Length: 425
Image (cartoon, rainbow, N blue to C red; front, side, top):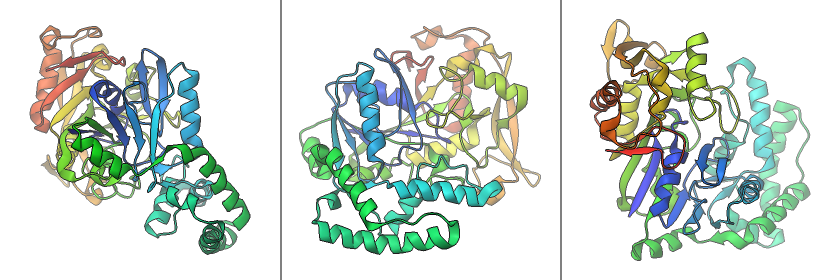
């Protein structure tokens, strides 16, 4: 059976914890898209970890963790992460890397940085991890697959020479920066080969056999529906599909194998990076929610930037869950709201004087104003509660109101950052 864990919103929903939790019963955990530009914070018996490329199942010795072909693979960052978890006392994980994955090159990071500098005030709020330039090259067919590391020297150098003609034209005439050389790019690729060679695998063939033998597979997505390049808040999106359906492509399995889609929603809203965010709040109100949120406040796991804060958005979440093909909603960080007397929930958008509950395209979204329903808070700490019926009545009312508004079943409720701080319904 294949289960996908994905986000309904802007990312930062708490997918890492849910993946870590579900991995207990998984044989294989796969990252299927995105790169090291976003992170998942995991708190378990080993401690607190921020993962960026590694799947969140690496903390179990019975799982195989896979970097799928859809991932933007930054090889030095991957191995830095492996070392970091080993230094934290975690047993060395079993890792496989798809031979069809493509590699983030140092020049991708440079181009990402240079373009943000060039755009200045009109920038995309990039994490400068090289993700957009990487995917641009992938779809322009000038990226480097892991498999190409094993080509003969002449063939690989000939490709490098073709690729850097374009790169150097931009570096010289647009960015006015130092040029690339064939030898430096080749040397980098040989370093990457030495690092990754023991882990390279035909992942789609491995998964075919695993599924034939009844193994449980967990697909782990990065970011959320609002950051999908086709269906999100374009152009302030990421560069690979954040939807569960892409998990089949990014892992190399048939789409019909994905039987369960666990879509993670936070009990309020948060986001890192630019883009439309209708229920966003500001100033002291945002600072207070940010301080109470997460396990150490709401700050990006990769960037450390303060997250933008907002109230729960039913319009965006309903849309996000629909796109994902949700079978189960995991509702996270509910315990953070215990300080509030009243809790606003965004139930509609007012656009040009009319209220809609359908999520619009970006041009209309820019004009949207939130329509709120205010619910009573529960004014108590719910950490440690393990049974749904033991939650305060107003807390249950909040969950059930949101469940009705978004139209998808909330089957898991996270009331703390730890692996076992979860309530099943």
